[in-house]
Length: 151
Image (cartoon, rainbow, N blue to C red; front, side, top):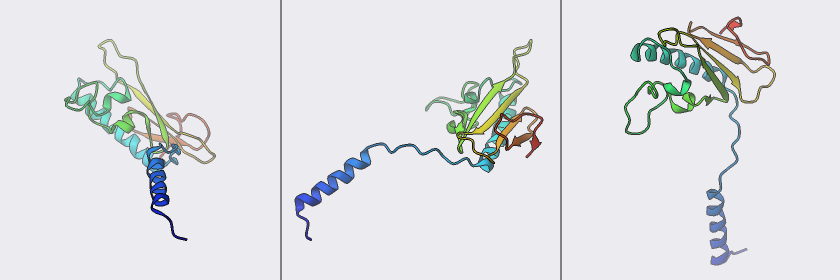
């Protein structure tokens, strides 16, 4: 069967139009090894943030991210983590950062980070770290803590 020029034009137009529509987002499968690496990156970024911006940890994960184009790194955007991680979602995990309360000198001396799979399933790893730099985890469907097994 031979297609006419009009038929080919319609097929081409449909293909081009179809590529213009956004594709549904498929959740990324949790990659626990990559998430553990991200926790190491957060701990390292916090050490640099502490040394660079006045002996205090960051007030939020976003403060470790990339500054706006044309802006220099600052305490609000230190350029220590990629924005995907600083935004709290990477490798099929959601990262929740909690800074400790500022002390009498307005210094933040503690923090915790919990990473859980976007959609937990039996056997998936939930990960915890804090200012000690130790990374811990659990395969139970709960938030990990400082008492969980070292990874």
